[in-house]
Structure formats: C-alpha cells, structure tokens
Amino acid sequence: MNKNMSLDDLQTVTKIQKRYLQGIEEGNYDMMPGAFYVRAFIKQYAEAVGLEPEEVFTQYASEVPATHNEDIPEKISRVQSRTSISPNHSKIFDILPKVLIAIIVIGIIAAIWYFLQKNASDADQNSKKSDNQTVTYQKSDNLKTDETDSKDQSTKDDANKEEPSKTEDKTQDEMAKEPTQELTVAESKGDATTYELKNADDFQVKIVSTGETWINMLNGKGYSFFQGTLKKGETDNKTVDYSKEEEAVIVVGNAANTEIYVNDQKLEYKVSPTDVVTQNITIKKDADDSVGE
Image (cartoon, rainbow, N blue to C red; front, side):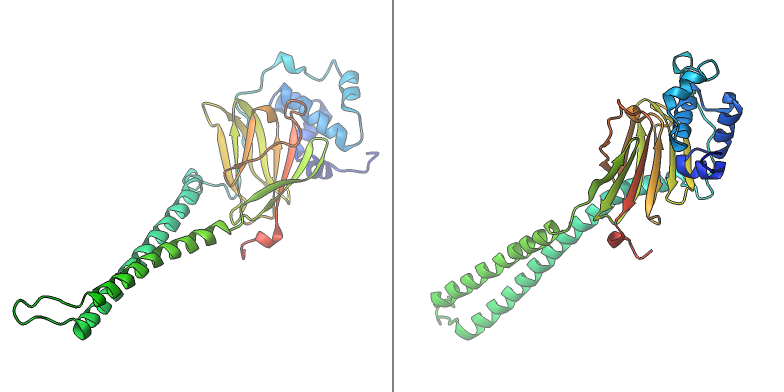
C-alpha cells in the first residue's frame, strides 16, 4: 500500500501468479507448491516492495514454514496455455537443425556431381572434335600417329578435373563466412540477468532438469506458456518456441538443478546457482535477426 502497487502490478514485477500473492497476504500457505517455494515467493514479494527478506522471515518465523521441514512437492498444478506446444512439435524442432545440415550436405554433393558430369561431357566433346581434325590413320593398320594432339587433349582433361575442387573450396569458404549464434550477458542485477541473442534464425528455449525444479516460461508481455515442476527420470525437460516473440522470460525456482538451452546452445548463468537459487532470466532476440514475422 505504501508503494501504491496493486496485486496486478506485483504479478507483473515478480512473475508470480496473483493467486499465490493473495495466499502470501492471507497466510494461506497450503495453496503453495511447497515450503521451498513459499519462502522463495515471499523473498521476491519483499524485494519488489522494498523490504528486507531476512527481516520479514525473522518477524514472521512462527508463521512462515521452514524449508527443511518439507521437500519440494512432487507435482504442482500446471497452467494450461492457450497455445500449448505439442510433444510432436517439440520433437520436430529438436531434429530440425539436423535436417537442415543434411540438406546442406546433400546440396554440396549434388553441386559437385553436377560440375563433374558437366566437365566430363565437355571433355568428351572436345576429344571428338580434336580426333576428327588432327588424328590421321595409316592405311595398313588404322593406328593413330599424332601423339602431339593426344598430349594436348590430356592437358585439357587435367585442367577440367581441377575445376570441381576449386568449386568445392569456394562453397566451403562461403559456408565458413556464415555468422554463428551469439548469446551474451547484457545486464545483471541481483537475481535478474538479461541476455542478448544474435545471429539466430530460430528462437527455441529448452529447459532441462538435472534433479527437481520449478519453472515458469513467459513472454515479454507476461503471458505464461508453461508453469510447473520438472523432475529427472519423469518429465525432465520442456521446450517452447519463442520465434514469434521478441523476448523470453524464464523464472527458475532451483537454478542448481536447471539447465537452459537456446537453439541447443547451453546458457551460462551469470550469477552462480549455488549463491542464488531462484533466478529471473530474460533473453532478448536482436531485432536485426527477426524473421519477417
């Protein structure tokens, strides 16, 4: 109230659902995912309104559950997304880079084969013309006698054989000049880090749990594509296509057990997960790389 903020404002700032914020204010912790997330949500709430989290925990020690008395819950109700991505689409996006590489390799092989066939055909035509104009035959045994023409033709054939190699080198050089994806830290403050994505046509974000973690995957406007728990050995990963979005916002409840991949490139945490367990990760795609969406 002193900050003149509504629960909707707090939801936008903390990325925590409004019903959880109401639960914190009412002391209704049974509706929370678990004790671990109760303290994590209270910490984000306090920081958003300018309070010291440790002072809040000390003042309400008898009411706030302690993390060592309760393990992370096995399952949390998941928010149903209006545009949820099916497992089949996730699999397609996983194999898409491999398919593109295979198409490029096949294209290179086809180009080399075309130039070889073209050069071989040209060589045969040149050989026939040379034979008709310069080769003479002996009346007795019809044997070729002009060795000079044969040597000249051999030289032309050798020159033609070198052209595919030059073409292949040129194709490889052009591929090498293609810019590679860059994922760099643009800003870092407290538990919030902003990354910038450059030289990327796709914008696929994959979350992998190496133990058990809670995540919330949103866009820059606060719309949640997925919210829930990932657990190794069960549902341990989730992929969201952000190609039509300008940025991806990832709220990580247990960073020590969470790996983030952007187009198969692993994101390196700017803030150590062992120092800050709950982190807010924002990934902004360079506007120059946007596909005409």
